[in-house]
Length: 71
Image 1 (cartoon, rainbow, N blue to C red):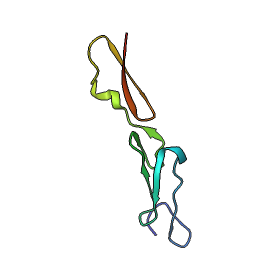
Image 2 (image 1 turned 135 degrees about the horizontal axis):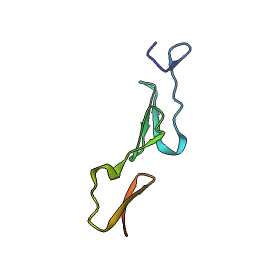
Image 3 (image 1 turned 45 degrees about the horizontal axis):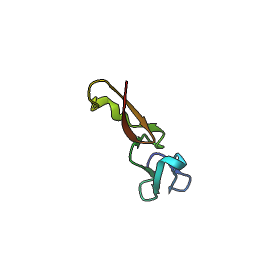
């Protein structure tokens, strides 16, 4: 069986419920909502890493949405 599959070679997903679009039963993998990553969709993508906010603002993310707040 491929890694992370259940007994009897049945795909098994343990996805983070509110951060996942669906479990791909053919691969046994979680398909994450935009802004989320990781095997179980448990890690938020760091959208601020590209430093895309203008000067005198602070980059913040919540639920996969980037916003630039005035300082």
